Amino acid sequence: MALDVNSWPTRTLKSCATWYSGGTPSKAIPKYWGGTIPWISAKSLTRFFISDSEDRVTEEGSTNGTRLVPENTILFIVRGMSLKSEFRMGITTRPVTFNQDVKALIAVEDIVPSYLAYAIQSKTAEILNLVGEAGHGTGVLPTDRIQNLEIPVPSISEQQAIARILKSIDDQIELNRQTNATLQAIAAALYNSWFKDFHGVEQENMQESELGLIPKGWSVMSVNDIGDIVCGKTPSTQVSEYYGDDVPFITIPEMHGKIFTLHIQKRLSHVGAKSQEKKMLPAGAICVSCIATLGLVTITTEPSQTNQQINSVILSAKDETYFWYWTLKNLGAGIKAAASGGSVLGNLNTSSFSALRVIAATKELRTTYHAYTESLFLKILENERRTATLIALRDTLLPRLISGKLRIPDAAQQIAEVAT
Image 1: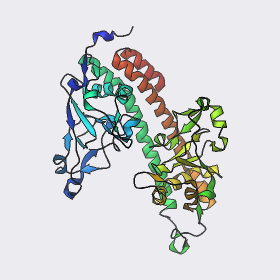
Image 2: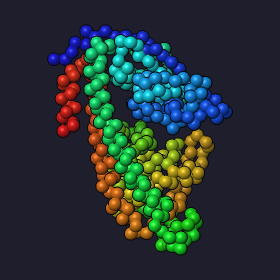
Image 3: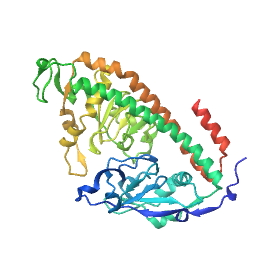
Image 4: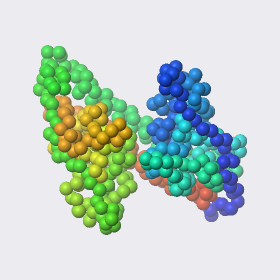
């Protein structure tokens, strides 16, 4: 029997927390920057549990132009291009500072902070509907509108139970991510040792090349030499029969932080894919973003197509996939340097991408590296698939738990079934 949601009072989000705005310490004052305190902005607010950032401030910086908030503070983006498609939010696991595009909420005494974070997350679709536009594609979330959202507020014990069960899923997701980060670091370290640092190669066994000193027997190739290059294309959105549930259609937002492309939201029908069959990619193709966000690299896991912002390589030798994955990923700086189109949006056309030069080890070493690291990459893929399943489960349970339509024991049973 479902809980009686009518027994749960609701409050406006405004009354559930104390609200704070952030800011940016002066970049002209070096002593404010380079410290140990995370400074959160849209680019670093990519996970639910917020613990670090690429940008950090000093103690002095944390009190000049920004705001320091404690552990268990809820942060979410209220201004930025990301708001047009996603609502970035989370809860801090340590004291942090944040910029002016972020709001901070510290839960009032009778609200469990992690419950409030999950309750806000459950309102994602509703929140995105509140987003307006400030021009140039920048989304804006009006504070007064989000403050009026109604939040169910059960008893403290019920809040704690709901937060605990949802966190159990997020803990499994985080463990998978940490495991994958370790596996990825091992594979990257081996690649760097063999193919960037040339460990074990004596100086007399090196030769000059257009890209600097490389071991004798190695060569310099263009990207076009390692396989067939395919630039994606978007089928006409005016033809409804082109879209369906059959063929994954990869876009740049689905490439962020991923080695493999999985569970792509947008899909083409077989008819839509057939209308541009020369754009079809097999499993194992390497996709590289070449417009707007440059240099993201992922590997397809099933036959797919991409949009025109992505160039892909269908490798001539599949037993070299993981060598070429890192080689193309390390091209990120080169891709950005070769791009045109201004400082905000870059554009690397297919011919320019195809012509980029890369160092190629011998065929034997390329296949040896692939064989050495294949088990690592397959484990990463397995963990990414498991993570995707857990995310889907969490996102299904979240609104039902917050609304009181699902009992805690029933949710626990569903989690146990996935765990086994």
